Length: 193
Length: 193
Image (tube, rainbow over all chains, first blue to last red; front, side, top):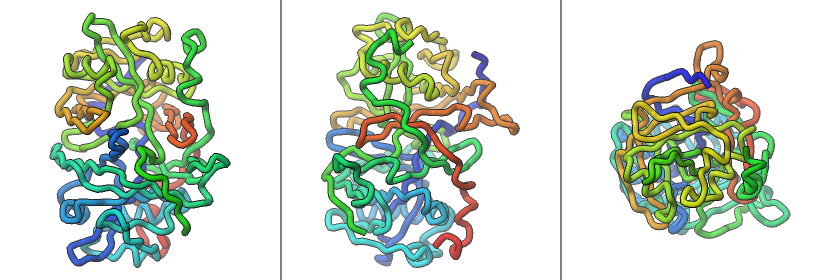
């Protein structure tokens, strides 16, 4: 195939959209939105999220040694975008978004009560990578809103309806159709060709 | 809202599906599929991918100090799944999948010629996190197949049609509808409520 080079860019498909919850120095619950993030270990379960040191949340994660991830639904896209545009130094984002902060009982950070999926993370590693600092948090609990559970009682991606961020056209998308079962559809190499 | 606790799990929505290209100790081009991954820095642009030390690709990344990411389309789901199920110790995955390895001119790793989007990464950091080792690679080039470019000449998520992996029901999904423009839809806090 003919590939065109775009040079060194932080571009890949897809990126997640995670709303990070922390307490500021004043104890005010704050939100930030990050897409440079993902699960990075199964045991202990860990999630990595990268923030610039200039952000308000950067200092808050270091101070509280904790953060939460609230995965919001596509119907909450304005809130996710708002939390990514403005700084917690200037705005009380929970209040302006009329969202309810819930104090985690496991870590020193708040999460969004209205979020369908929540992860509570204790800071384990801090990696300075350049413009961004990568925070690795151990996931102490995953919480899912009752209405997102399928018949097996597991959180279901189409009921959470999470956002996807696309570099390139800098837009949010939602998850579409199920394609196939993992660890199954490619089992036969002949079919996999 | 009523949230149900699931305990410590590596579960969040969405995960990406990245096909990792490396050379084995024998110089044979190999593939592996990973979802514990994501962009982790903008400058220098870096991507993190986590693998268990038991995998064939783990040693190959350390040896070659490089890896590639091939983002395959939803029509290539069987190949992505196959590359994630079997080990390069036992199978020549490029050959069995009838995919063409292209030798990167930037790093010591091959990528998939048939992939719509490719990243070539030089290994910069190795983080031992537990069951998984996190490899941070600096992205030296992003290559996109001509047919995936939009009218502005940028790679377009709906033309790449990347896979999403969902923990929970352990299935692959595709990207759905565009929801909104980022850094825009949430600009007004009144609208964002």
